[in-house]
Length: 358
Image (cartoon, rainbow, N blue to C red; front, side):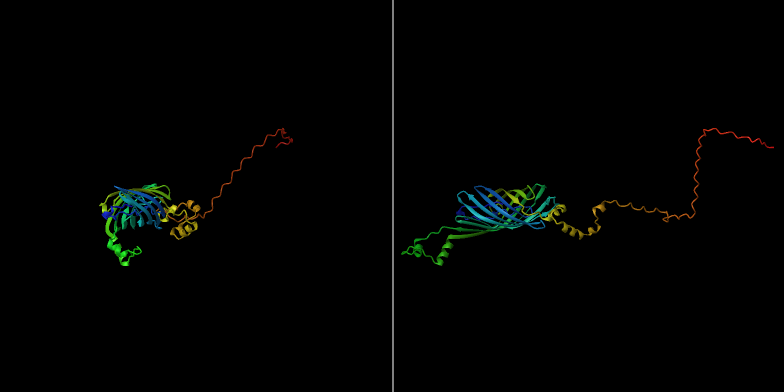
């Protein structure tokens, strides 16, 4: 998160503190490799912090791990102290473990994201040089109530080793000056032993160990499959486990997924959109279901009705064919002749021959 440095006056000798490293997780989305750009500001009583970050994230082909590497420019300004400037480097492994099904876009509705990382951080300001090397352990729980938004509450603990080299003014007495200054030429000549003694008296390297603790909420708005806008809100302290001044963090960032979504997180219909058809066919032929596959024309032809099994007591032997000759068919009735038309000419009566029967 923001670089929160609990600086005090030089005389106090307490510059390096645990829990003052940058945010080590730049995105909770492990579906595709991406880059992020972010700015965050920390508010603390009597001071303020700034962090400008660039992070490169690489997702595994399983979609379950995101390796994130970041470079941060950090500074801190406080009353009565010169502004301290520095750099921080982060390296983190984020594990995305879905607790529910994934949506059409590959995002799980609820997931558990444990993470582990390191964030060596250093600031330089005048007589003080601040270095802390923390090991960061934590987890988040991304929740995606809708396709366009994700909310991730998270917590972390960060045991660290701190180094605080302090450079103090060193004054030479008249007797010491006579030993190192040539009165003839006015040149200052120091032997190796004198240089080592001077450094030992003018520098003081202080080391300490502790564990910081912080928690927050990340808001991600999914504008498209390739672009997100993110917001960060967190609370911590510049010291071990809230023992130092309270720090509130507010910031935002831009996420650009430069690579395609890994195939493992997508549903089958979207997973095969960009696959070669010949490769899909070759893979299908290796499946047992390919033996039962039929062309669409055959698959839509209705199957013939199944034979009805015979009921109990019914003979399945077909009846024997009859050998008797078929009965003769009766002759067709001859239709009556139509009546002849009447003769229009008169018929002559029979002529008598004059012979009579006896």
